Image (cartoon, rainbow, N blue to C red):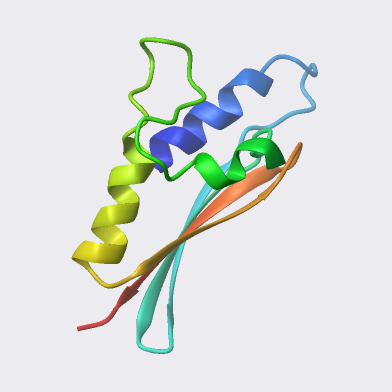
Length: 106
């Protein structure tokens, strides 16, 4: 998720002279006996047309040879099936994306 966030902010660097400042923010907090980990970026966000595909195996928005489309799919399986947590996404096209991992505290 961090790699995807860094990838998402890169295309905007240099497009708007000294106005755009790429940001990737990682936060954690404890909520109702669960740890919440948020990875947020101020990239272009995820278009509505592909929101429902991002956790599918082999789906990628990267050019051929640059991505396998397995990162978010594998992460989803590990978080949900392997650890009983949740993996959700909040995004607004043109503003950025936040992935939220919630894992139960043992």
